[in-house]
Length: 121
Image (cartoon, rainbow, N blue to C red; front, side, top):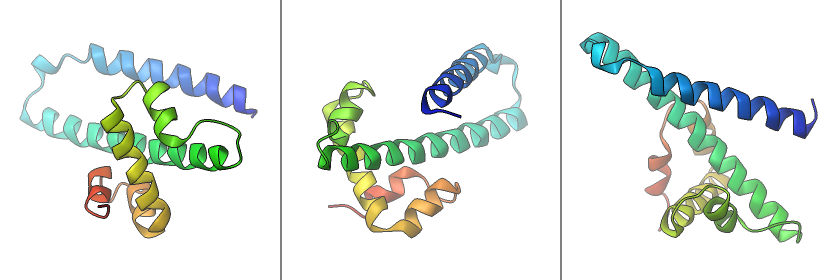
């Protein structure tokens, strides 16, 4: 599949998931349902955090070869986050690059991105 085709599929899947999550009748959930949903949301958060780290690492690589903006700029503008959040996510990407075991643990869902914050100054 080409990069463009991957982008199209990813965009459609994310839109479907977003719409599904927004439509959930959470006010009808009991405690057990909320527990399951909370775990599922956390799994999704870990997957998106891991993906953002990979995006930041690729943006850094491209910037170093003059092919695009650096990670902070990419996350700030394309990600629509605050400058502080862009810096934090860039710092997480550096920590993950320096400690591949932690990056793998994040990708496997064993830790959250916030755990990488303890590894950076």
